[in-house]
Amino acid sequence: MGRSGDLPRGLVDRFVARDGVWPDDTGCSILHVDMDAFYASVEIRERPELKDKPVVVGGIGNRGVVSSANYIARKYGVRSAMPTSRARRLCPHAVYVSPTFGLYQEVSRGVLGIFRDITPLVEPLSLDEAFLDVSGALRRMGMTSGQIGQLIRERVEAEHGITCSVGVAPTKFVAKLASGLCKPDGMLVVPKASVLEFLHPLPVSALWGVGKKTAERLADVGLERVADVAAAPLPRLRRIIGNALAEHLHPLAHGYDDRSVEPESVDKSVGAEETFEVDHWDRELLKRELLRLSDKTAAALRRRELRGRTVSIKVRFADFTTISRSRTLLVPTDVTQEIFKVACQLLVEQTPPGAVRLIGVRMEQLTTEGGEQLLLDAPESGWREADQAADRARAKFGTAAIRPASLLGESPDRSGATEPRPDRSPT
Image (cartoon, rainbow, N blue to C red; front, side, top):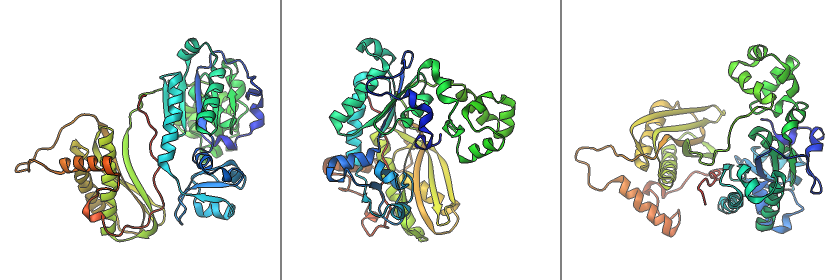
């Protein structure tokens, strides 16, 4: 789905809540709540003197990427995922801040706690957004969906000092679209009977799954609005954009989305990656980085009580060519050295030479099942016990308390930390 912020707001003004008044919310049990410029807002909360200044959060080095920008900075064209170097050209007078993910996670947990006070059906999408199904809460709280949305906005601001935007609708797709169209600090309610009235005037980029190229392909044949896609016969859409995408977009354009809110979302993979400040050819340096990332990935698996069966590495070269290589193990693992051994093999045996810009490690095919690959003449205590001892030391003294010996030397400069996953655990 295209950026909601880039869609024409005037087409949906009549659905926006104003002065405590909004359209009929009967049958609208799905809420999408999205924090406004989350990282930047949290940083400004900590430093109120930045309130009236453009603020950009992200990697501040030459290879850094913008994670968040407040709305003042966005007026200059700064957007998330933009290279920080470009942001500096667009807005050189902005305040550039490195992310403090621990603080964002703390605020995120507090906000999710507010949501879970209202309903157990909360599906976090990231640290700063979530779907809620409030169908049960309507009866229990004696409130309408719109009133619950207003309550959430008030509590988030009062308890955490930041603002959020809320979309209220009968489906997840429409609710997410609605929250983006009322930013910042707004609420938009799409009545069940008015879903098509809301959707059809919007450009096709509003549809989830339509990127720039697909939008151009549809526009070339005169399909520029959601209404055009809805009116097009499905066989014609298949010829234009392929079977799978056509069969995905056609129901959305008609307002159909039968996805439910899934509070028990299971991680499909766990991993870590880093972008270097300078491209690196040295394979020994890359192996050390793989060890650091394998250690980080294995620790994340153990915290979640998961093991992975497939080891995957991701390599991005200086020309931005990106490849991934993977190998599936006989037995799932959460052991650093086992993951690292396979990651190294993938780097040496299956990765072509070249200057590397980014490298990553990821574990897939996750399971909660235990099991170890037993070896003849194996010692009674091995790498798993070493990892568990390291976990205990880190829990007591911090994440930097212990690390593999080969990582104690000089490390390559990196562009910044990777965003953590949302807290999906029930409270």
